[in-house]
Length: 142
Image (tube, rainbow, N blue to C red; front, side, top):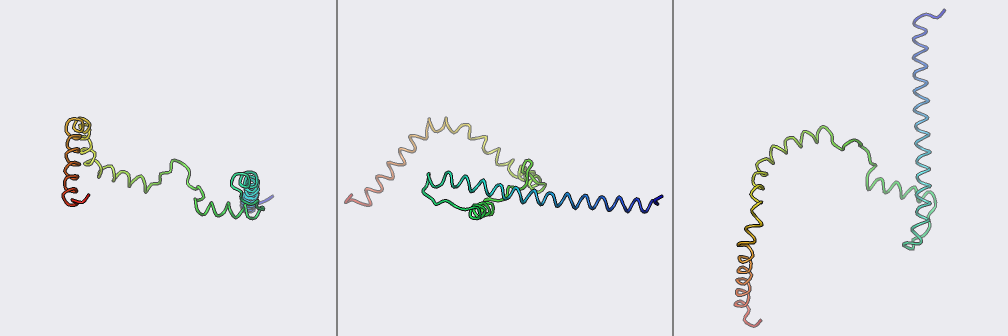
């Protein structure tokens, strides 16, 4: 009959062996997915790019290189969720308080259309006329 320590040790070894196989399985799966995505990129490139843009066909390794380069330039798409981290949430809270005074000023803009129709168009025409007369007085040859 096994003692309690032996059972505990056996369970611990089983746990770590299971975890090691699980990690190895995920690594193999990741490699398989990377090869599959590279193959898909190669097939799509060779199907579309020569006909659309006159580019040459590429082999598998060039497709994998293009995929890696695009991931480096455009990012790996990590994150997930709603895209907010704890730091961003705290910054947004502070920002709302800072912007509250500015929002009060924007409430006055509801009268802008009325003002523009009543006075703005005529004021603008007067301003343009003033600029034209100033320009013509500076350049009498024109």
